[in-house]
Image (cartoon, rainbow, N blue to C red):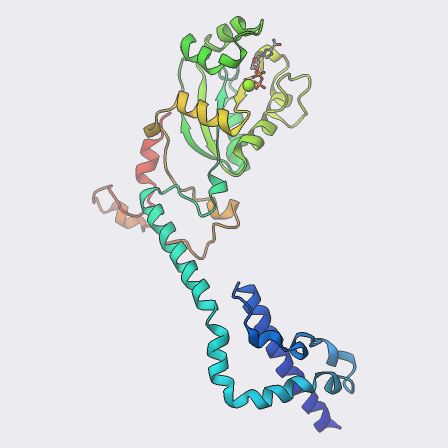
Length: 303
Ligand code: RTP
Ligand code: MG
């Protein structure tokens, strides 16, 4: 009885090993080879032996027999089964090498380009006058967006008229330009997943009377003519507005220390070791080839 039970255990284990190997092959993205065509091994019930010790040997017997016959071929077969995983691994390594090269040129590069979407946000003169700059910036920072450019400036009427050129026929256009030019504004570029759409959602409806509570306009203003913030309404307008308000060199390339805590695909395991602080303090040149050394980038931020 116990011998039978033991036999069934090992037979099931063998079938389990096969099934597990097949599972990991599939998981690693390697193509299934013809050796996997045996229907018997495909239909192995991993849980067959849990409650029915007597039935288990019957259902899985064919598999171990085949395994026993295959034993002499086991070594070459294993090589053949593992082979497809290496091309994938090579592709993986290749992609990683390319990414590391990109990172050495652009410290702000991320593995998933969707995380690099940018939007143009501008705090209007009423936000500055009412002391809301910190509060509004905090909302973007706390959400996980990365600030890549920021200025505090008085915008000329020409610049504002270009910025709002699509509204030039509207009756409120002259007043809009007067209001926007009445004091300093804070144009910014924020980066992150779905930055444009999420940015608009964070702003709330144009008219604060329609803005949901929890949005910037819904929480911080009342009147449409004093709605504290501008945000790009599409990817195209974001690109156009960023180019209008910032020179390329005013946009900082830097890697946020939070990146792997905000995005699953920016894995911790692949992160290169950060530069030890004593290396920076050693009085050596601040020019450092380490892409994660943000000492340059920090100085490039224009405020
Ligand atoms: P923004 O461009 O400033 O982010 O605003 P938005 O897309 O939500 O709205 P848009 O239609 O582009 O209007 C631009 C700004 O013009 C002012 N406005 N006044 N008096 C009015 O009826 C009126 N309508 C719009 C607002 O400051 C609005 O944000
Ligand atoms: Mg607009």
